[in-house]
Amino acid sequence: MTSRYESAKNVFIDSVDIEDYIDLDSSVAAYEQLQHSLDKPLKMILLFGKPGTGKSILLNRIQEKLKHQKEIHYFDTPAVTEKEFFHKLFKVLTQKDLPINTEVNFSALVDFCKNLRGKREIIILLDEAQMYGPDMMEKIRLLSDSRAVKFVVSLHKTEDEDLIAKEHFQSRIWEVIELKNATKEDQTAYIHKKLLKKNLYEIANSIKAKDMKLIHRFTKGNYRECNKLLFTIFEICEYYDKNEPAKVNYTRIPSKIIEMSALKLGYIHV
Amino acid sequence: MYDIKPLENEWKKYRKKKLKPWIIASVSLIVLSVSGIFLLPKSKIDFSKFDNSFVIASNSTYTEDKKIENSNRKTKSNVLINDPLNKLEIEKSVTDQVNIAANDSSNAFVDIPILDGKQEKTVRYGQKGKAKVHLDIVDTTSVTAYKDVAKRFEKSHDIDDSLFLARSYYKKGNYKKSEYWALATNKVDSNIEESILIFVKSKTKLGRKNEAISILKSYLKKSNSQEARNLLHRIENNKL
Ligand SMILES: Nc1ncnc2c1ncn2[C@@H]1O[C@H](COP(=O)(O)OP(=O)(O)OP(=O)(O)O)[C@@H](O)[C@H]1O
Ligand SMILES: [Mg+2]
Image (tube, rainbow over all chains, first blue to last red; front, side):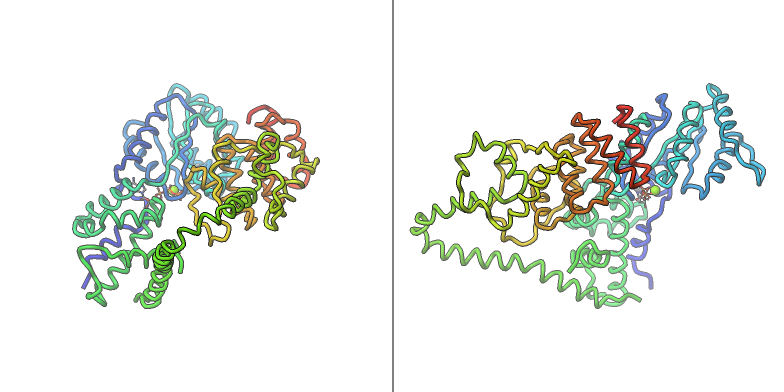
């Protein structure tokens, strides 16, 4: 027998799937800002935010939306080596594969880009850019100076580092877009919409405003933490449903289960 | 499949713990209100005592207050003058710290951060004996939260707290305070690069560029941090 909570649980598996994108007040605002910035004659745009605030999914979304109108490419986790990165870039720019065992001549690549100016405009969405070293970032900047290639650099930093990161980029990047943790309203909408997309209306309804408040308190509005917490909540519900159905309240998720999940994930302690 | 029992037990403990303060609070409230009825007429006599404790508390809560009092002594001395309780144990280390800071010329830490008058008034007294202050410092901008963190630092010397203050004040453009807290961090642990960088940046922002450069250069002799080098470059080119 499968529990109704099993499907609810699976809704909150953490993944960046463009199908699952949800329009929320904050994500719509960020999307529009990003799109607007892309239309400006900027060389680089910094998309900035704590882990789990939705940077990757936003980049995917914009690529999906614009791919028929623009040359737009999404680079996910950074290539292991610089060489690999330039191979990838070479392919995007020249639409040709570089023969194995050859390396990209960087200054030739810069010249190549300069020549593209006015002919093509290529947008590169660089996710997880905190993993590129300063040398690489410098090269990326030099390439963007050609104005034929525009980079959107997505960067996550831990709380400790965020200030320095921002300062580091402020002087070089023309636009900074920051994604923040969700407000309680956005997080509530996020949870509801995600469940409704999978037709889990009753379950969505069983999380009341008070529960949402508790969830927001535990996760501080972070989407990834929210996924984790809801996954655990439904996992526990599923267990009770299968093993001790007397303990299940189908009309309302008990705050006990929310707190148990928070304990399990270490948001709170005994 | 799922080990639910230990989790349930943990939750029960959590629940109990969470309810405890409420029970204690409500019980003591009842006790207080009952006894209050009897004690009411006496309370006048004790008034001077309260007055005293205000002076102690406001004086020892934390360093910055202390310093304001020093710098404003001329105008405000009547409040605190000759108070015998001024030299409480707790505040001793704090005062020492300030003195060291002020005397240590190699640090060139002469400027003493000054709080706005607003904050000074909101000093909370009578909190010393209280249990842990629970704070959510992530998003807060409220003045009292900063004060609470500062207070907590005086007790714990936890550099996470002082760094938080340094960073936040820098972000807010309050460079005197960010400089102060960066230095406070550095005193506890001199190996935290971030505190050095904030210290140097604050100095630069306060118009003491040459000093900042020389501190940074001496730091770079021991470390080959790229971040520090970049910063030096930016300061030298007036790009901060
Ligand atoms: N607007 C949204 N619609 C749907 N899902 C979202 C939205 N925003 C965030 N999420 C979900 O939240 C989770 C975290 O988002 P994402 O992975 O994009 O964060 P990130 O900022 O890229 O994190 P990191 O810095 O760690 O890479 C993902 O599961 C993602 O699907
Ligand atoms: Mg990501």
